[in-house]
Amino acid sequence: MANEVVLLGYWPSQYGMRARIAVEEKGIPYEYKEEDAWNYDRSPLLLEMNPVHKKTPVLIHNGKPICESLIVIEYIDEVWNHKSPLLPSDPYDRAQARFWADFVHRKVYGAAKRIWTTKGEEREGGKKEFIECMKLLEQQLGEKPYFGGDNLGFVDVAFVPFYSWFQVYEKFGKFNMEAECPNIIAWAKRCLKKESVAKTLPDQHKVYDLAIWIRKKLGVE
Amino acid sequence: MANEVVLLGYWPSQYGMRARIAVEEKGIPYEYKEEDAWNYDRSPLLLEMNPVHKKTPVLIHNGKPICESLIVIEYIDEVWNHKSPLLPSDPYDRAQARFWADFVHRKVYGAAKRIWTTKGEEREGGKKEFIECMKLLEQQLGEKPYFGGDNLGFVDVAFVPFYSWFQVYEKFGKFNMEAECPNIIAWAKRCLKKESVAKTLPDQHKVYDLAIWIRKKLGVE
Image (cartoon, rainbow over all chains, first blue to last red; front, top):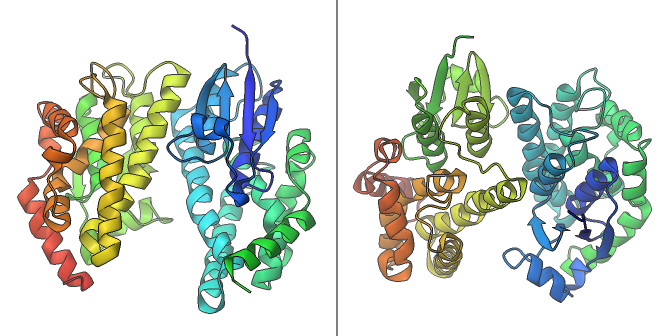
């Protein structure tokens, strides 16, 4: 079977980065198509491939769409299972990896967004929750080089895209990530040595400039 | 290895029901322990087993906890893989099942909750979104007896617990489920013929009485 792979993404989206890191880790040849999510200028292809959520990322494998970033990573891991396993083979370890990826997906994303899209008490609440999340993730990482152990795994792929937004959280939340969670910073830098991650993550300054633009659009300032 | 299985649940929780249906479908001997989530009277065991979210359901397998309902179902399906497969074996079909279970988990739950815990425009918005979700799910079901095909699958287990809340949605949303989505009602009644579902789902009247009590507590009326 031919393996035609197209990935619909949006460059600053942590969710889209996940899918991109996964295809890069597996060494899958693919075509990347950029969708401009903030201008709501969705392509007919995106609307056809994800009619329910109308969101990126979408992985199109031989014409068939797979949506939702964590589901996309699991799919990639199951189909291209010849190298770089992302989920552990033991069912309990798999459940744990899914738990922490889900934690990042829901808790970290939500708290982080409040830091840069809200003001006053709400922003402070977001910041407090975000830092608590980072400390829990530091505990979870422990002495391992990656959440996946000796290699990049499911939780690493789910979480490392947030690194490109750290400057946004720091500047609008007025705190220092390195001081709050040095082990997360060390881990992220370790991940960035992987070509799959380095190729995918945008520059923090570029993301910061975008965040300023979005805040104006949202009327936060 | 001995298989000691304990399930921490809360009877009206759709999420807890999922875990219970899954263990029942697999025919796993287990001990059920009820947690009273609405009185916030969490047991030391729950706090120990799910320190991050402090929520049910938790499946405790030989002393080790698995949290988050959809992750629990996947775990059960992977460990007890000798009978009643819940997820399909084909990776694409698995991704589709995960997509629709996630859709129920996030979209259906959120919309449904707005119907009975809010008023006015917000309630109407919840009702509109809930009915749209039901119509999408009807399309997805198509002519199949179950979302899983000829047998109960992952999406069925994720979705059918909502049936015990249908009376709540109907009474507070002032609409008729049978008129809006007859195929969902027919499907739910089909699921209820399965012992695993019939044993697990509480009576709709009992759930309705609880909803009245919670609404008072929340100050909705």
